[in-house]
Length: 293
Length: 319
Image 1 (cartoon, rainbow over the protein chains, first blue to last red):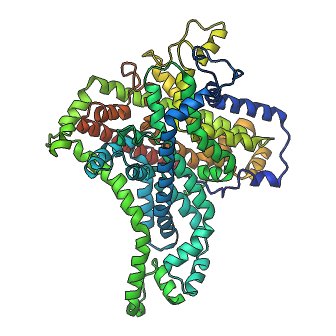
Image 2: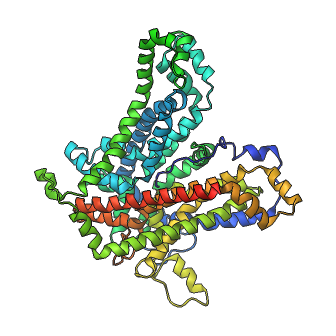
Image 3: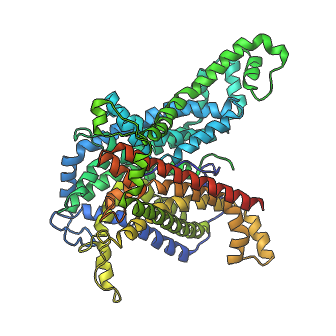
């Protein structure tokens, strides 16, 4: 997944259920049917991924439409061969989440509440400009730097590089949220004797919980889905994120697709889990954000 | 710390009154603490975006190969890398492919995304659930999506060709990923599929912001259906459209995962873009200087597009 900066909307996340609950939803069975068809077409490749992953080995010639002959062999092979890579991806992604939030949250707060005058605009513009830098340019330069610093094939190296999508995203998303925190709440903390750091940690961060969660979810997905840095900044099999494991699977001649699709399904689980468990945060992450036009 | 100090410290927009000069020291220290909030992010952005851009500009003028990693020497070669890159027979094709890939992907993603957004803008049962499900293709790792598309598009056993076989008017089986004429079309198709959720969701958000009263007022004047779209929806959606298109092009220009996952730039460079070509020169040929030169050309294209588009758009809005 390529990075995405949250865009110009200030729908405050309520667009999933908020507007629907006020006015009763009109019955439009025709619309519902057409909507289901659109989504079915769009999600067909993902269904196919699941279907193939559940087929027994040797069915590769022409995959049946339904996994009637249910088999978990694909998953057994996938876990045996790619289980370690899944763990690597998990460590790197969680590391990137922690690192991104620690770096981005104070900056977002500073850009939202401290009066830096025109510098705020300059800095925000700088953050947005990062979106134009192609990953290959970053990888090209990082490879030689990492090689000198001994960061190739390390967790630290991948965590730092994989935060490149999450940090600009989180700064912009969290700043937009923190703008809505009234200055009086923070000033009240100052009156109680708190310094800027205490006020930030004990007042601003708890209020910004939702923005932090949304930033964390997306940073996780960006890092989890990263392919380019995995491809260029690791060279050994011992340090291989799942995306690269999948790529090396499809790189050669493929005789049995079910372990590959099982790996693809496993690598998609975080996205599916987030959509089910944290739907409103995901919606807020895609549409919520900054850059008031 | 008193409340007055807070106000003095946070009132950066107002020039400090001379009477406060006695307080300059605490204010300066406060300023330093405030600045410290920004430091980690600034350092990160400089190291992971600023440094690579500058380093690539320099590498573009250097002979930077595997030998450099052993000897530490990267002699300056002027524009030699750019000459090598641009005169490579693959370059023209990669440039053309980049253009076709970007325009094809954006037109497809935007048009279908807008239609889906307009459709979901009329609320109906299950619309919320279906809209969230639409995000899935965008949330799964691109390389996982590429993997399944590879199998779907397989010439002999792929489900797409098996379905086409059932249709009476299709002859033979298109070699989606292995024919030089179709591979780029297939790659664009998959990239459109990947981009629809993003476009549809942002445009849907934009549609939701347009006040309902405008349509009610418009319908009194006879503006319904297509006329309502062109006279109410489109002008008001314009800022969102700008953001979607600019970001879309900028993101599409640098796409790598999808192409590497589906075709690796092949067959016979039929799907090579500037981005994959740069990857190829650096990490397959280990000629980092030429790879950097290609990366710089990509940044330049991106920059020129963003500036030209935003200029034209501003002029169009001003008029």
